[in-house]
Length: 532
Image: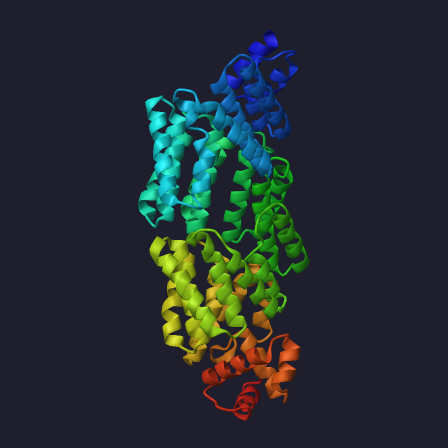
C-alpha cells in the first residue's frame, strides 16, 4: 500500500518518473491505477507500457461496469496507437469507445472521442469541424471540464484559419495555448494543443509566433524526460526554427537527436525531424545524406516532397524534378495552405526547365493563397515567386518590385538563406537594368552569406560565373555556352538531359533577354562577355 500511495502522490505532483516506477512496483492495481500508470508511462517515453496499461484499465473498468471510464481508456489507446502509426488498431479502439458511450447519458466523456473526429473533418468539411469544435466547448462548459473547452477553442481556431479568417483563428489558438500552459488542463492535452498550434504556424509561415510559443512550451516541458513525447516534438520544432535562422549545424544535431528518441514514441514527429535534416543537407550540397533522410522521412509516413524534387533539381536532373513535383501536386490532398511549399518549388523547377508559362500560372496560385491568408511568411513566398517569373520574362523593373518586397519580409523574419537567394535574383535584375554597381553589391552580400552558412551549391553557382548577365537563369546560361561552341539543339538536349522542345524554349527566352534574334548573335554575345 505504501508504494501505491507514493505512486498516486507522485502522479498528483506530475513527478512522472517516480509515479511510473512506483506504479510498476505495485503487485496489484485497480482500473484507475492502470490508467495512471498508462499516463505516467507516456510521459517517461515508454509507449509500449502505456498501451499495455490502458488495455488493462479498459478491461478492469468493464469488469466492474464502469463503461464511461472504459470508453476513456479505449480512447487513450486509440490516441497512442495513432502516434505509433498503427491506424487500423487505433480506428478499432475509437469505434469501441464510441459504442460504449452510445447508450450512456451525456457527460464529459462524450467530448474526448470528438478529438479524432474533428481532426478527420478538418480535411473534409470545415463547417462540420467548426460545429463539432463548438459542441466540444459546450460539453466542457456544461460539465466543468476545462480541457474540453480549450481543445474545442483550439479546433475552432484551426478551422477558422483554414477558412481564411486568420486573425480570428490565431486569436483562438493563442487563447487555447494560454489555457494549456496554465496547468489547468490535463497534461496530455497541453502538448496536443501546442503541436496543433505549431502546425498552423508552419502552414502560415508565422515564424515569430512559432518561436514564442515553442520557447514557452520548452519551459513547460523542462521537468520532463528529454526522450518523451512533447519534449521531443519541441526539439523538432526548435530545429526547424534554428534552420530558418541559419544555425544549420545546431539545427541538424537537434533534429537528429530528436529523431532517435522519437521513433519509438511518435513516428510523425520523427518523420518531420528527418525531413528537416534532409532540407539542411540539400542546401549544403550533401546530396547522398539528404536523399537518405528524405527516404527515411517517407518510410515513417511523411511525403518527401517538395524537398526531394528540389534535390533532383540540385543534381541537375531537371526533367526528373519537374516530373516529381508535378506528380506530387496532382496527388496532393492537403489544404491550400499546405500546398504553398509545393507551388513555390514548382515555380523554381519550371523556371529551370524554361517553362515560364507554367511558372507564371503556379506563381499566381501561390500569390492568391498568400493574399487570402496574409501572413508575413506567405507574402514573402508569393512575392519571390512572382518576382522570379517577371525576371525570367526579362521584366527587370517589374521583378524588382516583388523581389524587394520579398527581401524585406524575409529580412524581417531573420531568414538569412532566403535573403541571400533573393539577393542573387536582385543582382540579376539590376544587371538587366545595367546597374552594375548594385548587381555587384548584391552578389557580394549573397556570396558572403552562402559561405557563412555552408550553402555550397549556391556558392559554387555564384563562383562558377558570378551573376549571369542580362537576367539569364543558370539553365539559360548553360544553353548559351553550349550553342556558342557550335552545338546543335539535339547536342544541347543530350548534354543537359532535357528535351529538344525545352532547349528551343530556353533559346527563345535568352534571345529576348539578350536582345538578339539569331544563334550567331547570341554566340557573339557569349564571346564578348567571356562566357565561353
